[in-house]
Length: 284
Image (cartoon, rainbow, N blue to C red):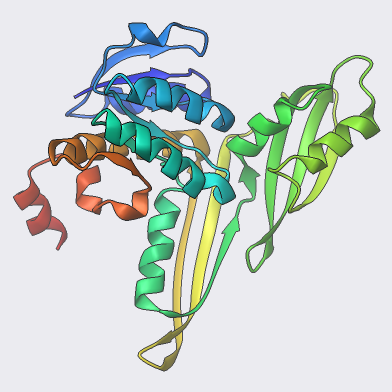
């Protein structure tokens, strides 16, 4: 399987490392946002671009019959993106896996499994403390911000606050910049604090984490409790999940299951390298 990378920021660099250690994948090239994507020749392209550029690049590649994997992370817009890419992927007999990071992504699978086990209950997804890649990229795009770091701080029961450390451009009006930041879709629904710093070098971090909890009833039996936690390097885990999903695109395409999919629609075995029988014998 030949997999190319489009975008070479934190996630793109981590994706390169994940591909180099994969036993069944060959790196087909690394491309930047301003490269001519007609020059990309691969089975699958990992879209390591800012979230708001995913749809544009995905459609361009799908129209060439090239499968795509992205880590689109605006939760409220995922289904709309899936539907938009489905029509293109089906027409050109390709596969697109959307929102294939860790949240949305692998955490989505945990939430789905938790709901299957405890159907009558409530799930709390508590992120952090740590750096949010999507929120950081969104903050950097705000006019007047030279550089930014968005930290997610868990308050509890799925509620978070955002601490956004920013370096302002010369002459930028701090109040205006803060108003733009807080009205952005990434930050509008959370308690957001903008903190102005001279340099981000001393506080820059790629660590993140999640504590996912579901409490409720199974078969009318109360006090069922499921808990999943991890502390991770954010871009490394995002990239690893994207590479795993690249395998799934090939499997789905071979089965003529064209279209766009989220990770909860895909059998987990499709993410893994190796013989199907051996995997079943090992994991089941």
